[in-house]
Amino acid sequence: EKLDEGLEKTKSSVFSKLSKAVAGKSKVDDEVLDNLEEVLISSDVGVNTTLKIIERIEARVAKDKYLGTDELNRILKEEITGLLDESNSGDATEFTTPADKKPYVIMVVGVNGVGKTTTIGKLAYQFKKAGKSVVLGAADTFRAAAVEQLKIWAQRVDVPIVEQGMNADPASVAFDTLQSAVKRGADVVLIDTAGRLHNKVNLMNELTKIKRVMDKIIPDAPHEVLLVLDGSTGQNAIEQARQFTKATEVTALALTKIDGTAKGGVVIGISDEFKIPVKYIGVGEGMEHLQVFNRHEFVDSLFS
Ligand code: GDP
Image (tube, protein in one colour):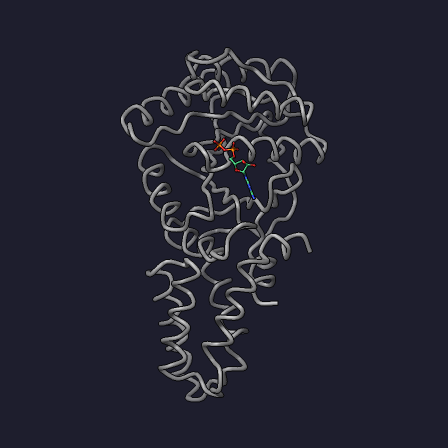
């Protein structure tokens, strides 16, 4: 039910647009498909992914000869779930980490303002709630506010944080954090990093250096590079994903602010385009407002 609330805006918008798209029609024809294309694009599904969905529905129309508009929801659901499936989006609902990787190290990347700090705080809360011990590392040392904000979250969630203040070497903070986590026998490490996209060479160098230093303590760390994107920014989020995937190997996505947007369709476009699993979605500002992304739940709540 929580997901339903988070997707309220997307749902009501997609839903009302969809019903307009098929109004007065009993059969899926070219006009219905044109309208559907508009609905998907205006929901920020993205042009390429929209065309893919439309083509698949066209193929089904061609095969079945008659496709009733009353069946459109069910078919759209199937096609969208299929797209999310291809991109490896999980079926999980729990906050877990692999048992053989302890501590499990998550390096969090993303541009300022997308909700990176909040997402780290929410993750710390959820992992802790799931019985895991968590350590935070404040390696976004470029902004004083970033370190301060993360400290506030550490206090709120009551987890230890390793920091060296502003302007410290991010790689040194990461090194200390991992060392401290190993010493404590922690289960999960969340490392915040600076997201200065305007200087791509710096960004790439910095992330590479952080990873190299982590490797010295835990050979396969980081186990996850989580890119945080603001889901309400639609095509901007897609552009950021493009830039970050060039700068480092992103293994998972967190899409924030899905609650504040009618454009939740961006989840579908991003999974399809980057083939990187959307692992988490942010559906509010509170610490409990983060969910493990489950494609079935997502698609169900879009169409229910
Ligand atoms: P950062 O600069 O990327 O670290 O961004 P912050 O974590 O400071 O978040 C920026 C703003 O977005 C804050 O006001 C957060 O409360 C808000 N925010 C973060 N995630 C979500 C979300 O899922 N939903 C909503 N509605 N707001 C969010």
